[in-house]
Length: 352
Image 1 (cartoon, rainbow, N blue to C red):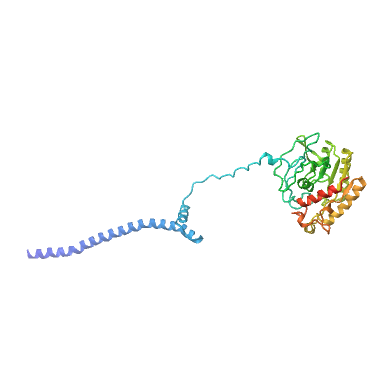
Image 2 (tube, rainbow, N blue to C red):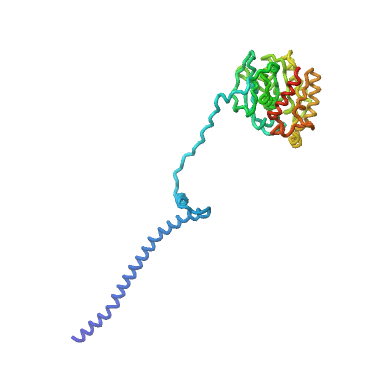
Protein backbone atom coordinates (compact mmCIF):
# COMPACT_ATOMS: atom_id res chain seq x y z
CA UNK A 1 0.00 0.00 0.00
CA UNK A 2 2.81 2.36 0.62
CA UNK A 3 4.12 2.14 -2.88
CA UNK A 4 0.71 2.95 -4.23
CA UNK A 5 0.47 6.00 -2.11
CA UNK A 6 3.84 7.04 -3.28
CA UNK A 7 2.75 6.50 -6.89
CA UNK A 8 -0.48 8.41 -6.37
CA UNK A 9 1.26 11.33 -4.81
CA UNK A 10 3.71 11.46 -7.65
CA UNK A 11 0.89 11.44 -10.07
CA UNK A 12 -0.75 14.36 -8.41
CA UNK A 13 2.43 16.32 -8.45
CA UNK A 14 2.77 15.74 -12.15
CA UNK A 15 -0.84 16.83 -12.78
CA UNK A 16 -0.48 20.27 -11.21
CA UNK A 17 1.67 21.83 -13.94
CA UNK A 18 -0.77 20.77 -16.61
CA UNK A 19 -3.68 22.36 -14.87
CA UNK A 20 -1.72 25.52 -14.28
CA UNK A 21 -0.90 25.65 -17.98
CA UNK A 22 -4.53 25.26 -18.87
CA UNK A 23 -5.59 27.84 -16.35
CA UNK A 24 -2.96 30.34 -17.41
CA UNK A 25 -3.70 29.65 -21.09
CA UNK A 26 -7.36 30.26 -20.48
CA UNK A 27 -6.58 33.48 -18.62
CA UNK A 28 -4.21 34.71 -21.31
CA UNK A 29 -6.65 33.86 -24.10
CA UNK A 30 -9.46 35.60 -22.22
CA UNK A 31 -7.31 38.66 -21.62
CA UNK A 32 -6.22 38.65 -25.23
CA UNK A 33 -9.75 38.50 -26.50
CA UNK A 34 -10.75 41.25 -24.09
CA UNK A 35 -7.89 43.47 -25.23
CA UNK A 36 -8.71 42.80 -28.86
CA UNK A 37 -12.36 43.65 -28.40
CA UNK A 38 -11.55 46.74 -26.37
CA UNK A 39 -9.06 47.93 -28.96
CA UNK A 40 -11.59 47.43 -31.76
CA UNK A 41 -14.24 49.43 -29.91
CA UNK A 42 -11.97 52.33 -29.08
CA UNK A 43 -10.91 52.68 -32.72
CA UNK A 44 -14.24 53.98 -33.93
CA UNK A 45 -14.55 57.03 -31.66
CA UNK A 46 -11.00 57.95 -32.53
CA UNK A 47 -12.01 58.28 -36.14
CA UNK A 48 -14.85 60.55 -35.10
CA UNK A 49 -12.44 62.70 -33.16
CA UNK A 50 -10.20 63.14 -36.20
CA UNK A 51 -13.14 64.13 -38.36
CA UNK A 52 -14.31 66.66 -35.85
CA UNK A 53 -10.85 68.20 -35.62
CA UNK A 54 -10.64 69.00 -39.29
CA UNK A 55 -13.07 71.93 -39.21
CA UNK A 56 -11.50 73.25 -36.01
CA UNK A 57 -8.09 73.38 -37.64
CA UNK A 58 -9.59 75.23 -40.63
CA UNK A 59 -11.31 77.72 -38.40
CA UNK A 60 -8.14 78.37 -36.41
CA UNK A 61 -6.27 79.17 -39.62
CA UNK A 62 -8.76 81.92 -40.47
CA UNK A 63 -8.93 83.40 -36.98
CA UNK A 64 -9.79 82.66 -33.35
CA UNK A 65 -12.18 79.74 -33.10
CA UNK A 66 -15.49 80.42 -31.43
CA UNK A 67 -18.02 77.77 -30.39
CA UNK A 68 -20.49 78.97 -33.00
CA UNK A 69 -17.86 78.87 -35.73
CA UNK A 70 -16.83 75.34 -34.72
CA UNK A 71 -20.42 74.17 -34.80
CA UNK A 72 -20.84 75.61 -38.30
CA UNK A 73 -17.58 74.03 -39.46
CA UNK A 74 -18.59 70.64 -38.08
CA UNK A 75 -21.98 70.91 -39.70
CA UNK A 76 -20.25 71.48 -43.03
CA UNK A 77 -19.00 67.90 -42.97
CA UNK A 78 -22.52 66.56 -43.33
CA UNK A 79 -24.40 67.11 -46.62
CA UNK A 80 -26.86 69.97 -46.56
CA UNK A 81 -30.22 69.91 -48.30
CA UNK A 82 -30.21 71.87 -51.55
CA UNK A 83 -31.87 75.26 -51.26
CA UNK A 84 -33.69 76.85 -54.19
CA UNK A 85 -31.99 79.89 -55.69
CA UNK A 86 -33.68 83.16 -54.81
CA UNK A 87 -34.32 85.34 -57.82
CA UNK A 88 -34.04 89.09 -57.37
CA UNK A 89 -37.37 90.87 -57.66
CA UNK A 90 -38.04 92.60 -60.93
CA UNK A 91 -37.32 96.30 -61.09
CA UNK A 92 -40.33 98.40 -60.23
CA UNK A 93 -41.18 100.73 -63.11
CA UNK A 94 -41.09 104.44 -62.29
CA UNK A 95 -44.37 106.28 -61.78
CA UNK A 96 -46.18 107.48 -64.84
CA UNK A 97 -45.51 111.09 -63.93
CA UNK A 98 -41.76 110.50 -64.00
CA UNK A 99 -41.99 108.87 -67.39
CA UNK A 100 -43.34 111.87 -69.23
CA UNK A 101 -41.13 113.92 -71.51
CA UNK A 102 -39.65 116.98 -69.77
CA UNK A 103 -41.29 119.41 -72.18
CA UNK A 104 -44.09 119.65 -74.74
CA UNK A 105 -41.46 119.41 -77.46
CA UNK A 106 -39.32 116.43 -76.58
CA UNK A 107 -36.48 114.71 -78.36
CA UNK A 108 -36.60 111.43 -80.24
CA UNK A 109 -34.74 108.30 -79.12
CA UNK A 110 -32.46 110.10 -76.72
CA UNK A 111 -31.01 107.08 -74.95
CA UNK A 112 -27.76 107.59 -73.06
CA UNK A 113 -24.91 107.68 -75.58
CA UNK A 114 -21.61 105.88 -75.19
CA UNK A 115 -18.62 107.65 -73.69
CA UNK A 116 -16.57 109.26 -76.45
CA UNK A 117 -17.56 109.65 -80.06
CA UNK A 118 -16.16 106.92 -82.34
CA UNK A 119 -16.17 107.31 -86.11
CA UNK A 120 -19.43 105.36 -86.28
CA UNK A 121 -21.23 108.42 -84.94
CA UNK A 122 -22.05 107.40 -81.36
CA UNK A 123 -21.48 110.34 -79.08
CA UNK A 124 -20.51 110.75 -75.49
CA UNK A 125 -23.18 111.16 -72.80
CA UNK A 126 -24.65 114.52 -72.02
CA UNK A 127 -23.66 115.33 -68.46
CA UNK A 128 -23.20 111.63 -67.73
CA UNK A 129 -26.64 110.38 -68.75
CA UNK A 130 -29.43 111.57 -70.99
CA UNK A 131 -33.07 110.61 -70.49
CA UNK A 132 -34.85 109.05 -73.42
CA UNK A 133 -37.99 110.62 -74.79
CA UNK A 134 -39.84 110.86 -78.06
CA UNK A 135 -40.48 113.50 -80.62
CA UNK A 136 -43.63 115.50 -80.22
CA UNK A 137 -44.92 118.76 -81.57
CA UNK A 138 -45.56 121.78 -79.31
CA UNK A 139 -48.82 122.14 -77.41
CA UNK A 140 -50.12 124.70 -79.90
CA UNK A 141 -49.49 122.46 -82.88
CA UNK A 142 -52.45 121.72 -85.11
CA UNK A 143 -51.44 118.08 -85.15
CA UNK A 144 -50.69 117.22 -81.55
CA UNK A 145 -48.59 114.07 -81.41
CA UNK A 146 -48.66 111.12 -79.09
CA UNK A 147 -45.60 111.04 -76.83
CA UNK A 148 -43.64 107.99 -75.81
CA UNK A 149 -42.72 107.49 -72.14
CA UNK A 150 -39.21 108.46 -71.11
CA UNK A 151 -37.13 105.81 -69.40
CA UNK A 152 -35.65 108.29 -66.95
CA UNK A 153 -36.58 111.56 -65.32
CA UNK A 154 -34.81 114.74 -66.50
CA UNK A 155 -31.45 115.37 -64.80
CA UNK A 156 -31.39 117.73 -61.82
CA UNK A 157 -31.36 121.38 -62.82
CA UNK A 158 -33.05 120.91 -66.19
CA UNK A 159 -35.08 123.96 -67.18
CA UNK A 160 -38.81 123.67 -67.81
CA UNK A 161 -39.01 124.59 -71.49
CA UNK A 162 -42.79 124.77 -71.40
CA UNK A 163 -42.57 128.42 -70.32
CA UNK A 164 -43.94 130.85 -72.86
CA UNK A 165 -41.48 132.44 -75.28
CA UNK A 166 -43.17 133.98 -78.27
CA UNK A 167 -40.06 134.25 -80.43
CA UNK A 168 -39.16 130.56 -80.24
CA UNK A 169 -42.71 129.22 -80.16
CA UNK A 170 -42.53 128.53 -83.90
CA UNK A 171 -38.86 127.46 -83.92
CA UNK A 172 -37.61 123.99 -84.80
CA UNK A 173 -34.19 122.67 -83.76
CA UNK A 174 -32.79 119.74 -85.72
CA UNK A 175 -29.62 118.00 -84.61
CA UNK A 176 -27.86 115.39 -82.51
CA UNK A 177 -27.34 114.91 -78.76
CA UNK A 178 -25.91 118.40 -78.34
CA UNK A 179 -29.25 119.73 -79.51
CA UNK A 180 -30.89 117.45 -76.99
CA UNK A 181 -28.83 119.20 -74.33
CA UNK A 182 -30.22 122.54 -75.50
CA UNK A 183 -33.71 121.13 -74.99
CA UNK A 184 -32.95 119.91 -71.48
CA UNK A 185 -31.05 122.87 -70.10
CA UNK A 186 -32.16 125.96 -72.00
CA UNK A 187 -35.34 128.03 -71.74
CA UNK A 188 -36.47 128.52 -75.31
CA UNK A 189 -40.17 128.22 -74.55
CA UNK A 190 -42.30 126.05 -76.82
CA UNK A 191 -39.64 125.41 -79.43
CA UNK A 192 -39.80 122.03 -81.16
CA UNK A 193 -36.91 119.58 -81.41
CA UNK A 194 -36.24 116.92 -84.00
CA UNK A 195 -33.13 115.61 -82.29
CA UNK A 196 -31.67 112.19 -81.61
CA UNK A 197 -28.48 110.63 -80.44
CA UNK A 198 -25.94 110.22 -83.22
CA UNK A 199 -28.21 111.89 -85.80
CA UNK A 200 -26.43 112.63 -89.09
CA UNK A 201 -27.39 114.37 -92.31
CA UNK A 202 -28.05 110.97 -93.89
CA UNK A 203 -30.35 109.98 -91.02
CA UNK A 204 -32.57 112.95 -91.85
CA UNK A 205 -33.80 110.94 -94.82
CA UNK A 206 -33.34 107.40 -93.53
CA UNK A 207 -33.77 107.07 -89.76
CA UNK A 208 -37.22 107.14 -88.18
CA UNK A 209 -36.75 109.23 -85.05
CA UNK A 210 -39.76 111.58 -84.95
CA UNK A 211 -42.84 110.33 -83.10
CA UNK A 212 -46.00 111.48 -84.88
CA UNK A 213 -49.52 110.08 -84.65
CA UNK A 214 -48.37 106.98 -82.79
CA UNK A 215 -45.70 106.11 -85.32
CA UNK A 216 -42.14 107.10 -86.14
CA UNK A 217 -41.15 109.11 -89.17
CA UNK A 218 -37.94 110.45 -90.59
CA UNK A 219 -37.08 114.10 -90.05
CA UNK A 220 -37.63 114.65 -93.75
CA UNK A 221 -41.18 113.31 -93.56
CA UNK A 222 -41.93 115.10 -90.28
CA UNK A 223 -41.09 118.45 -91.86
CA UNK A 224 -44.23 118.12 -93.95
CA UNK A 225 -46.50 117.86 -90.92
CA UNK A 226 -46.32 121.42 -89.65
CA UNK A 227 -45.10 124.87 -90.71
CA UNK A 228 -42.35 126.54 -88.70
CA UNK A 229 -41.19 130.14 -88.67
CA UNK A 230 -37.55 129.32 -87.89
CA UNK A 231 -35.43 126.22 -88.40
CA UNK A 232 -32.06 125.75 -86.67
CA UNK A 233 -29.75 123.05 -88.03
CA UNK A 234 -26.66 121.61 -86.32
CA UNK A 235 -24.81 118.73 -87.95
CA UNK A 236 -21.23 117.63 -88.37
CA UNK A 237 -20.04 116.24 -85.04
CA UNK A 238 -20.98 112.68 -85.93
CA UNK A 239 -19.77 113.08 -89.51
CA UNK A 240 -16.20 114.08 -88.56
CA UNK A 241 -15.10 110.48 -89.07
CA UNK A 242 -16.58 110.11 -92.55
CA UNK A 243 -14.16 109.08 -95.27
CA UNK A 244 -15.35 111.95 -97.47
CA UNK A 245 -15.94 115.48 -96.17
CA UNK A 246 -17.34 116.32 -99.57
CA UNK A 247 -19.99 113.65 -99.13
CA UNK A 248 -21.00 115.29 -95.85
CA UNK A 249 -21.33 118.73 -97.44
CA UNK A 250 -23.27 117.32 -100.38
CA UNK A 251 -25.75 115.56 -98.08
CA UNK A 252 -25.98 118.61 -95.82
CA UNK A 253 -26.95 120.60 -98.90
CA UNK A 254 -29.76 118.14 -99.54
CA UNK A 255 -31.00 118.67 -95.97
CA UNK A 256 -31.08 122.43 -96.49
CA UNK A 257 -32.92 121.97 -99.77
CA UNK A 258 -35.48 119.73 -98.06
CA UNK A 259 -36.07 122.34 -95.35
CA UNK A 260 -36.53 125.00 -98.02
CA UNK A 261 -38.98 122.76 -99.85
CA UNK A 262 -41.13 121.95 -96.83
CA UNK A 263 -40.69 125.24 -94.93
CA UNK A 264 -40.57 127.94 -97.62
CA UNK A 265 -41.44 130.77 -95.20
CA UNK A 266 -39.05 129.78 -92.41
CA UNK A 267 -35.84 131.61 -91.52
CA UNK A 268 -33.09 129.02 -91.86
CA UNK A 269 -30.13 129.00 -89.47
CA UNK A 270 -27.08 126.76 -89.93
CA UNK A 271 -25.10 126.45 -86.70
CA UNK A 272 -21.40 125.71 -86.59
CA UNK A 273 -19.96 122.63 -84.90
CA UNK A 274 -19.01 123.70 -81.39
CA UNK A 275 -15.44 122.91 -80.26
CA UNK A 276 -14.41 120.14 -77.88
CA UNK A 277 -12.15 120.47 -74.86
CA UNK A 278 -8.37 120.62 -75.21
CA UNK A 279 -7.95 117.25 -73.55
CA UNK A 280 -10.51 115.63 -75.83
CA UNK A 281 -8.97 117.26 -78.88
CA UNK A 282 -5.49 115.99 -78.03
CA UNK A 283 -6.57 112.38 -77.44
CA UNK A 284 -9.19 111.91 -80.16
CA UNK A 285 -7.87 111.51 -83.72
CA UNK A 286 -11.30 112.27 -85.18
CA UNK A 287 -13.22 114.55 -82.84
CA UNK A 288 -10.63 117.26 -82.41
CA UNK A 289 -10.69 121.01 -82.90
CA UNK A 290 -8.51 121.20 -86.04
CA UNK A 291 -10.90 118.79 -87.74
CA UNK A 292 -13.90 120.77 -86.44
CA UNK A 293 -12.42 124.02 -87.80
CA UNK A 294 -11.95 122.41 -91.20
CA UNK A 295 -15.56 121.24 -91.31
CA UNK A 296 -16.88 124.59 -90.08
CA UNK A 297 -15.20 126.37 -92.96
CA UNK A 298 -17.04 124.09 -95.39
CA UNK A 299 -20.32 124.60 -93.51
CA UNK A 300 -19.89 128.38 -93.68
CA UNK A 301 -19.40 128.21 -97.46
CA UNK A 302 -22.42 125.94 -97.79
CA UNK A 303 -24.65 128.28 -95.79
CA UNK A 304 -23.63 131.24 -97.89
CA UNK A 305 -24.25 129.30 -101.11
CA UNK A 306 -27.73 128.24 -99.91
CA UNK A 307 -28.71 131.65 -98.56
CA UNK A 308 -28.93 130.43 -94.95
CA UNK A 309 -27.81 132.35 -91.86
CA UNK A 310 -24.57 130.95 -90.44
CA UNK A 311 -24.30 131.08 -86.64
CA UNK A 312 -20.85 130.59 -85.14
CA UNK A 313 -22.28 129.32 -81.85
CA UNK A 314 -18.91 127.93 -80.85
CA UNK A 315 -17.69 131.38 -79.88
CA UNK A 316 -20.34 131.54 -77.16
CA UNK A 317 -18.92 128.54 -75.28
CA UNK A 318 -15.19 128.56 -76.16
CA UNK A 319 -12.36 130.15 -74.20
CA UNK A 320 -9.75 132.57 -75.53
CA UNK A 321 -8.00 129.74 -77.35
CA UNK A 322 -11.10 128.63 -79.23
CA UNK A 323 -11.57 125.39 -77.26
CA UNK A 324 -14.29 124.20 -74.92
CA UNK A 325 -13.30 124.84 -71.28
CA UNK A 326 -12.86 121.74 -69.14
CA UNK A 327 -15.52 123.04 -66.75
CA UNK A 328 -18.09 123.17 -69.55
CA UNK A 329 -18.43 119.42 -70.01
CA UNK A 330 -17.91 116.14 -68.21
CA UNK A 331 -16.80 114.36 -71.38
CA UNK A 332 -15.24 117.19 -73.37
CA UNK A 333 -18.11 117.26 -75.88
CA UNK A 334 -21.56 117.79 -74.40
CA UNK A 335 -22.37 121.01 -72.57
CA UNK A 336 -23.57 121.23 -69.00
CA UNK A 337 -26.41 123.51 -67.95
CA UNK A 338 -24.28 126.63 -67.51
CA UNK A 339 -22.87 126.43 -71.02
CA UNK A 340 -26.18 125.49 -72.62
CA UNK A 341 -27.48 128.76 -71.19
CA UNK A 342 -24.55 130.55 -72.87
CA UNK A 343 -25.58 128.89 -76.12
CA UNK A 344 -29.17 130.02 -75.57
CA UNK A 345 -28.08 133.60 -74.90
CA UNK A 346 -26.12 133.60 -78.15
CA UNK A 347 -29.21 132.47 -80.07
CA UNK A 348 -31.29 135.23 -78.49
CA UNK A 349 -28.62 137.80 -79.37
CA UNK A 350 -28.77 136.70 -83.03
CA UNK A 351 -32.52 136.73 -83.60
CA UNK A 352 -33.70 137.87 -87.02
